Image 1 (cartoon, rainbow, N blue to C red):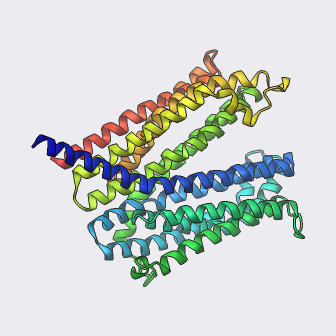
Image 2: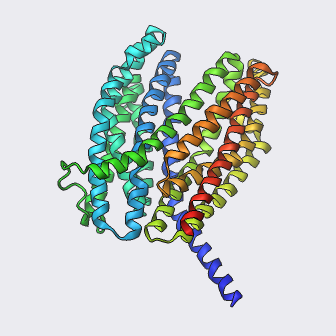
Image 3: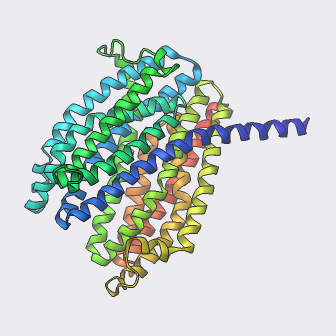
Length: 458
């Protein structure tokens, strides 16, 4: 009897591993593709000129903050659709997507206006006039890509929640290729096209965003299963109850996203106060972990979907299993990444800096020290992000946002600032503070998930 139960448990675990990876691997491809777009754009800006790199980097970061924060709000669609999909509630899925479309329009219009006039804020923040002019040139074009960026984020959440992730990965990879080619052709004036510089990079980006959005929309409208859903009928009708649910679930996710992006932005500015060499070392490590972190970020989306689907089937045990299987896979991946960062720091740093250049002599040891802290931090950072995704699958978003603020801003940033500016640790101290905040957030998120599933399982 015990043997048969053990075999059954192993079979359930194997099935969950398979279901989780089926979702997570394509989503990881999406996140890595999007990270590659930002990386290539930065390289292209640097090749055009130093002023373009400074202004374009600031403008691109500004646009990304708006997109990621607003997309976080739209992520409220994912757990609600996943739960309805697990329950087989087709009308509810249709209503949620219809109201999600209205939410996209409601968010895109005012925020686009803000992006178009962001040069006013840049001047008030004391940016150089050249930076303001070039940055505004980029943003005035990019504003036309804000709607398709949000539309793609919404549709990606919907089809992913319904376990259609491979198409999203294919479209994202295709978009990356289009963007790279467009940057090269329009930015540098190749194949008979005029050399548009930073404006060309922006044009290539909005073209890519529209292609990705329309491609995913076309897939939904033509897919054998998805085209049976009336996603876009009577889209003008407002369902206040569903809109309220989307806002209740999504706004805390958007706030948590803004807090996370804001923390890295603040730490980067603090690194600059410690000196150019410290800032350069920080950027090397930050760019490295930003790439590796894309995988657990994708796993967190998969955890949201898997937990939501199990909740929709009223399977609390399955939801617990989905959450912890995701964490186990994420932990294994981040242990591997940490080992690579610890074993080959010079090779990784050498991708960004010439190790033989005497001008980098002081930067390399600084980056190596920060890399060691970041590697150890990654071991907890991946699992804490995945367990947060599991909480989102339970539609628990408000408390995690509060816990994020306490752990990262209240504890991590405070400790990091003290270690960075009141001890000899400098940049390593700031990273150590961040790592302490990550450790505390991981403990709190695990406690929160265990508390909720145990209480609901009783």
